[in-house]
Image (tube, rainbow, N blue to C red; front, side):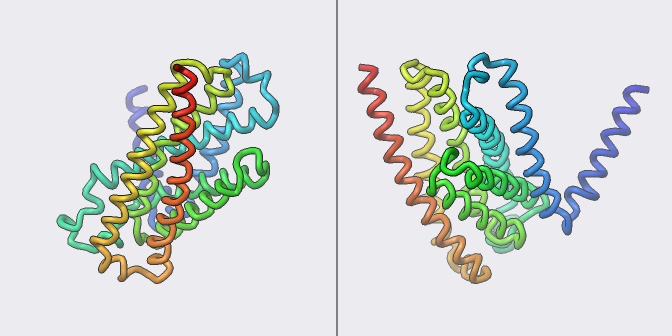
Amino acid sequence: MIAMAMKSYQNHAELLLKEYLLADPLIPYTSIIGGIFACKMVYDLTDLFSDVCFKSYSSLTKLQRIEWNNRAISTFHAVFIATMSLYFVFCSDLFSDQIHGDLVTFQSSAQSTFALGVSVGYFISDLGMIIWFYPSLGGMEYVIHHFFSMIAVAYSMLTGEGQLYTCMVLISETTTPGINLRWYLDIAGMKRSKAYLVNGVVIFFAWFVARILLFIYLFYHISLYQDQVKQMHAFGQLIVLVVPVVLSVMNLMWFWKIFKGMKKTLAKQH
């Protein structure tokens, strides 16, 4: 009886997913709402469990607790969207011009659109928090980063254009968990620990691969498929050409800060 009930529940869940959440006209709305709801849920659960599991949590200031929970949201989003983007770009045949025969700049699926919609929901939530608590959760560079990211991801989600390049850029979110862990170690008073040192080295190399080398490959791919890029809507072309450049400049600026920070940390260790 239990097995039959579980099977029935599974069938109903699959039907709901197929007929409602992943129904083409509803994907943008359900995914964005789902992303915002997920952010709220992660924030509340982090607040609940942190109060029980971490003794130092109760001693933090109100703004520190807000940032603590906010970083849990960004970590959750980073793991989700980086995993999905890596799968779509490197593991699936979604963007294969040899298999589909279509223009890679116009290839998309219900699953990729849904994943991007969840990401839009995150950027809306996080940008709202950054502005509401400005500048406690980040300065103007974070506002610019989130604004451009939100516009680019939303356009790609709604039109289906350039989802390959959007997913490539979102792979760079693999660096976010490490950045957040560094903040947690700092707030816990572990700046002189071995974990803090290892974290800094990992961030340096992860940032170099995911936000420097990957963007170089992105620009190479755009130049290789420039004829297909030119067939996109003018606004889509603008996004593909401008947003990665803006993000690359910011990535290089942050990379320089990471390098100086790692150099300073290594000097202290010696």
